[in-house]
Image (cartoon, rainbow, N blue to C red):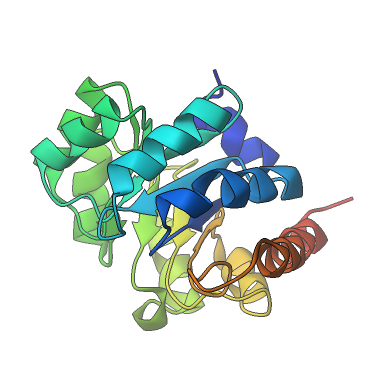
Amino acid sequence: MLDFDTAMRKLPLIAVLRGLQPAQAVAIGQTLFDAGFRLIEVPLNSPEPSLSIRLLSDKLGAVALVGAGTVMSVQAARDVAAAGGRLIVMPHCDTDIIRAGKDLGAFVAPGIATPTEAFAALAAGADALKAFPAEMIPPAAVGAMRAVLPQGTRILPVGGITPETMASYHAAGASGFGLGSALFKPAMTVADVADRAARFVAAWRRLQPE
């Protein structure tokens, strides 16, 4: 099964499928996988998120990391794991949830907005740091945190990211991104999502050295 490091090497972009309906899950997940995505989260404030996670995990779990976002409690983390999810993404830094996720064998990316939160998250075992909301964490702030965090720390800005805004964050030290409504909205067709996914993947590839 795919691990977090391998998924990040393949494409360090997390698809945030907020509002995903279970009936859409397999088609949207396959479309993202075909575009190159290997990290897919269903926020828990979506309709029937556990069912969508189970459907995605059954379809793609051997070749992609599927899990949940907006994980707000230890019990929610357990529910994600029970549905087959192996990725726990949070909007905040709750060290109890981070530790619980790691105990469950999941890969965990808590939300952080300050160096204090970043160091606490890493001490609890976080695999990556979700810089959230990116609208209030500009590239300069990412660069400042990058300068003091341990080498190899993965910082993933999330919130308002578009193909056009990725370059400045990448130059400041971002390791990848979480992509929300600019990639997926529930009313979008599969073709819409495929087009947006292709644009994000192309934008990321342009940032990589030859």
